Length: 131
Image 1 (cartoon, rainbow, N blue to C red):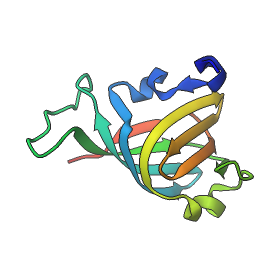
Image 2: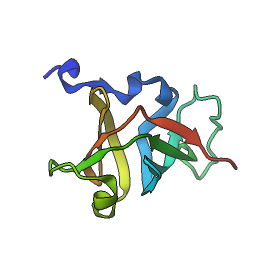
Image 3: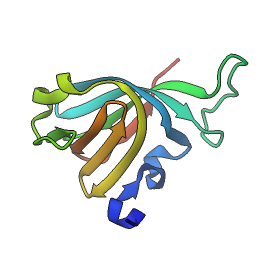
């Protein structure tokens, strides 16, 4: 199957320029109004403007961040029926991210140690947290 058939990769989204989602880890999922938010430890690549050389005991530049999916209408987990985010968030685990794809406009497929999460929402917004 071609990459086009699978949708657009997160590496093609400008919001994720200079980051390595496959080196990142989801710490929590929560709602704020109509937005689905993911607290993450984000792995920055050398071309990211906030990249800093890791300390000797570190293997990568990791910074706290939030991925926001605004206007989140539905969420599905591992192929189960999509439900309102408030009904399913407690069932989604935490862990390392493997991939994020955009199979169609307004649909995001997040893969990781927590399984496969399908999110129907507006385009994601990535924000680094302050020091």
